[in-house]
Length: 156
Image (cartoon, rainbow, N blue to C red; front, side, top):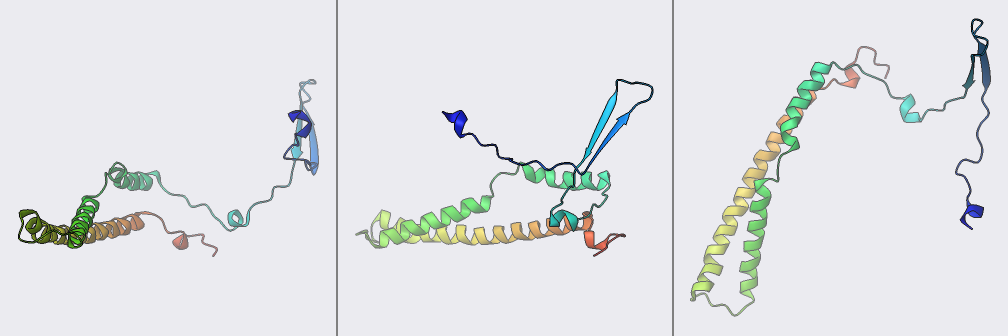
């Protein structure tokens, strides 16, 4: 049966280092017992410190981040997919028996590469602007967030 194979995860519980029993002299039936166990902290927690941050600073940061929370996909991603699709169509048409003197050949070999170049160039310019805006936003937030290395009681 399954009950016979069960083994608990914790097989040994440390004994408390101290046991303190307190009896309230006014209430003879009320007895409080306190067990004291050693607590071992992780090395990351030992080296960490707590910094007080004003709630107004956190509110400013949250107000700046909030509009980006519900932001949809970038228009630049759509331009990149259009550019790569149009380029793929033009390259694929090179391996087919499509002639340039037909209407579909002219459209595929002349119009589609031009549209691919326009959308690809637009992608790189929009992406550059998005990256610059993101860097500016990060700089603005870093000015608002307290720096742990510049605190008054920095022990490091």
